[in-house]
Every structure is written in C-alpha cells, then in structure tokens.
Image (cartoon, rainbow, N blue to C red; front, side, top):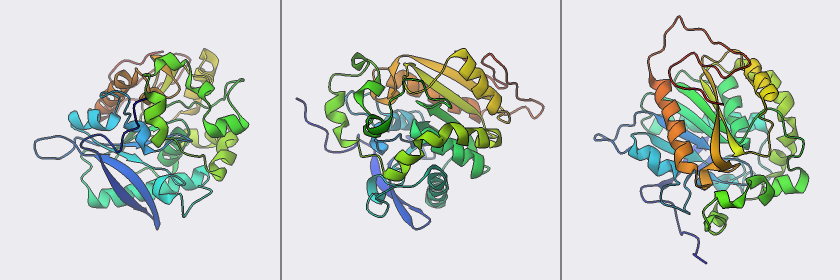
Length: 311
C-alpha cells in the first residue's frame, strides 16, 4: 500500500487563528498572482469526522481545492472547526452549531486583520460544515461576505440516512459507491479523518428545525451542490422546492448536481470538476450586481444573476 503523505500539498502551509481566545488550526494556500494579492479568499469548512485536510486531497495531484484555487488567483483557507485539530484539547467535546458559527466568525475576524482577502470572503462548506457556514451567513455576516457554497448538506435528511454510531464514524456507506474515489483514497485520507466531538454529534438531528429558523436571514448568494450518489439528504423536486422557498432573502440561489460523485465530493474523481464549478460561482459573485434585480424563488432552479443554474 502507498503510505499516507507526511504533510499538505506543496504551497500549502499550516497557520493558527485566534477565535476569541480559542486557537483554531488551518491550512492556507495563498493566491499565485503577480503581486501576491488574492482576487478573493475562499474559506473552506469541513464536515463531521473530517478535518481541514479534506480540501487538500492527496490521492491524485488535482484533487486539492487549495492548490487549484491558488493557481486561479484565489487564496484558500481551510479551517479546522472547533473540536478538531489544534482545538481538540481545549474543546474535547467540541461545540454546538450556533457556537461554532460564532467561533468561525471570530476566527475570520482574526484572519482579516493579518492577511489580505481581496474582494471579500466566500464560504465553501461540506456536510456539517455547510450548517455552520449557513448559520455564519445568517447571524454573523460581514460586508465582505461574497456568498456561500454548500455540498453534502440539505435541509431534510433522507429516510435511510446513516444515524447513531455509524453517522458519528462517517461510515463508508455514506460515501456512496467506492469506485467513485481513487484507489488510494482510503489510505491517504487516514490523516484527515477524526472523531466527531460529542456536542457536534448531539446537534446533528437539530438541523431541519434550525434551518427553518435561520434560512430566511441568509442574504448573500447561495449555491447547493448535491452529489449524484448523495445518501444523507433528500434532493428530490419536492425537497428542493421547499429548500428554495425557505431561502427567501438570498439575491441568487443555485442548486446543482455533481455527476459521478458520492457524499465526499472533494476526495473523489469528480473533485476537480466540482471545485472548478465552485470557483466559477465565486467568479459570478464578483460580478457587478444590478441593484434593481430581485430574487426569484420557485419550484424550478432559479437565479437572479448571470450564469447557469442546473438541476
């Protein structure tokens, strides 16, 4: 077997952020531009049972969101959420959802004070991290928040979604067909898998109710991506229509499906395709906005800005 890599990809470095007295570890890959200034900063937020390294996949050279984003002129910051990485010791039980959103907002405040962010910050989140990102956008939005991308997370769990101990372990069943991932994935991913903190695990079931409360307070462009073989969440037409109706204040809402992918899109063969779509959405969020444009939400995929919206 191929041994797990010793560290992050070339050009990726480890940093620490002060989140209101809590130290969060993170991976940083700065924009490869002529003057080093990023066009914008993409902040990647991992799911349950993973770590920041989820966005720096090692099974193939082109899987890493961090290095791809940097080559395209974006700085990419992947943060270890509370209860993971450097904060595991101080927060052995982690934090609940609302606390995590506040901690992430504090960490980003520290980052902004020390690094250039370009046109603003874009949250790109996976699975449980998607919940934290949406809560951050709803309750801790800043003027430079450009938008949110969420994969591996909806608002209504599928009837046969993993639960209990299997959910806490991130069981293989939730990954989807294993042939969607490079053969070495389950060797190289060993260093990025982590135990799910107890408070986080306890909060998993609260999301459908919490989403109803916060969705209407999200006021930045949002894109949801569902993998073709997503097993955790409902993404049928009825569920998607309800999802759109809840996000009534977003200026642009896009729902996409990623073909040839399972739940952990950023670790699979589809990672590069998915990451390019995400960065394309960031590009859309950088375009000038027509102040007269009004959000349109209905049963079909809609957008009030430029670019395609797929289903």
